[in-house]
Image 1 (tube, each protein chain N blue to C red):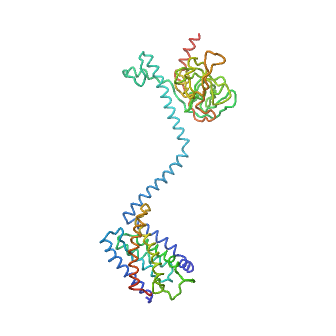
Image 2: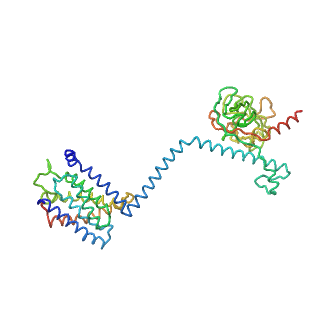
Length: 173
Length: 293
């Protein structure tokens, strides 16, 4: 196991534990409809920039599937994770310098890209993830207004945790 | 194989995503009650629509059979209707001035009055003309189907003609648009009758002759014209058409009026018709013969 794999595993386990044991309990303590912080997609966003897209999709589905175990919602988070794995490349591509990221920029974190870039990228990425998640959760666009409302509310709360995570850990690889 | 794997690695993000989403979709529908219910409901709606469309296509291809079936039903109803009208006459014959609808006689008398007089034979027009002075129709029913000369031909819209010649499987009918056609028709509102003839020209217009002069002011355009029931061939109240214009004095006989009648049946668009068989025509004809003697 090389040095670049270990942080990925730790981040996977750490974010999964936070999501499944802490954030889920917080959500259950209040109304889960609009207070639904989903931090685990950060694992997908922080995967190595040079990682091939299929791996990102599969790892996204993997962490989503693991979260589904906690939430007893087979396939729902896995679908959102796979979607985020797919769109991550598009979102990061929007903020890549001319000629793409170099091998020095290992992950999409404030340590390698600036804070404003990280925040803007994370904002779009999390919005897309949450929108997909709530759409799959509702499984119909009949409740489109409710989907947008829940996405906006959860996105606002989640972004606070995203900033906190960046400030506390500011991962380098 | 290695190259294919490399290609998938480079461009396979989308493909992988689609496969994973399909897998997730199955899991979501299978193991989540809410999403499963939504999916079941959706498939029910769309499945229903697809089935409905398939049924429509199937119905379209079986239209011919269904039309035939409906024609039989129509004939049965027409025959019951025509016979119901006859029953009123039969009731009157027993000296009870009551209509069939309000008949409150004993069942034995009612039973005696129920005497079917007409049968309707389903047929198709396989030849038709409207441009000659004397027009004819060819019909796909003949003596094998109990069709005989002097039977009336009607459609769902109105009168069509009269059977003149019969072969085992086909018959030729004199169209209503024939100079020799003469049908007793009645003005339904005015309760008077006359002779309906075709004088040539417009194939949609016939002339009702021999209407008493005192009806001149009460006949209005649009008034319904029906068969009178005074002929052996046509049952009572079969639609003929409607009055086209105000009645005018008959130039050949100024004591009577003539009325132009717009036919309810478009004679250029004939397909399904019924041949009316009067079950007592022989009996009535023999009585008529005695009068002539």
